[in-house]
Length: 253
Length: 320
Image (cartoon, rainbow over all chains, first blue to last red):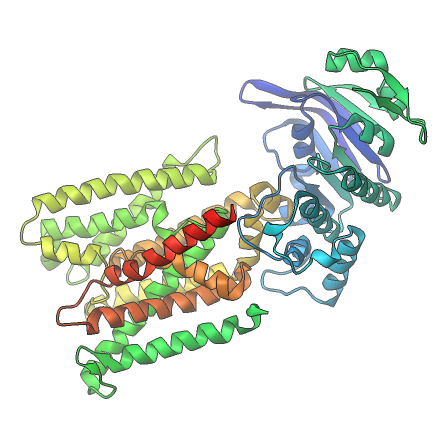
């Protein structure tokens, strides 16, 4: 569904990604992990078609990403960004409804089908009751649920998320990743940049580890998160144990 | 919901102020002044609604596209350029001989349009034009033209009065056969521009989420920004060349509009346009019917606008 061939990107003369090769198919929840500045967000933005001027190739559904028109891309790929701030007090419902924009003509209002999709998305993210409240008055966790509902209303085949669990408490971290997991089970591709290795290990089918712009490891959590590799990439020694329920590797700080 | 009443309130306020503007004169209430005076008043009401709606709608659009509630149409440096053109034409005495009656306005418009290109050249960073550098170069260009205006004011003697009057804003431009073309161009540009902004109001909403998010929701961000900046700049150049720098309409009216219709640009653009037209008709009516000499309308809008602006700032401080 997504593939990258020899993908490189640099900020001025500072290289951020060096020759990344990867393929990701539908029905997977994939975690993109790595230390700060390892190129995770840059890679995600290249795959979302939001960065111009990379070298190499990115294909979405076997088609070069640059050949997509922006409206067409928006009906295929949705993105959850790291920070969401709102300058004006839209109601939460209006923000979720913006997810329907790629499907509507300029002055067309949302129809009954759109409203059903919007409400279903809000129900799924446990935020239906927030609808009438101004989005500027929501707490961080509430706002992230609204943002997640917005991308669900976009009904994408590919969902890209940049640290969607940032600043969230435990319950909301799990809610976000459970929704992501259920999308993957429905046959979508979900790729999430995650900072929390333990969450990534527990919820993802596959982990991709980046370090200094290079792909260091790619595989099931137990293949990627090994003690020697953690200490090499993160340059710190941390014990790796098994999760009592899932058996996945967990790293103790 | 307040949204349901936003249309009727906006339309009603426009109609009421228009009626007031048509029936008030220097001597107080005077609804049947005779044909000639009636047409003079009608012309002023039309010009006020043109300028008011253009400034308010472009202010609302720029606030959305820059994601900044303090943005306004004069931020982009165009007003400084157009005003400088007016001042230069007055100092050089061009108005009377070179291009006929409307040369003053044409000169001013040309300077405003020149300022757009200057701002646009300055704002270019690595092939893109981030919102911050657009604002910064607009401010810089405005400051430069203000300096030039000050210079000309200090050099001018008998033109000084006329210069002050035009720079502070006035809707007293005479409708004649010669400037009818210019007025038609300004009218078409402004109301065509308002219609375009309304037509693209969904994209304006998405821009409030930020440029990357708007792009991920299907907006061609760089193209869209370029269209909106150029269009609003052309509108402002035309309006300033006709009526001078009338402050605060482009800044306060969108905020009034949001109180009435909420921040959704699909309602906000037309509601702001109607409210802006109404506010400027009201201000102009006050300006020409209070006392003997006409007060520059920019003074009235500023005196109405500053207290409201302070109120908004206080509210922002309280909420953050």
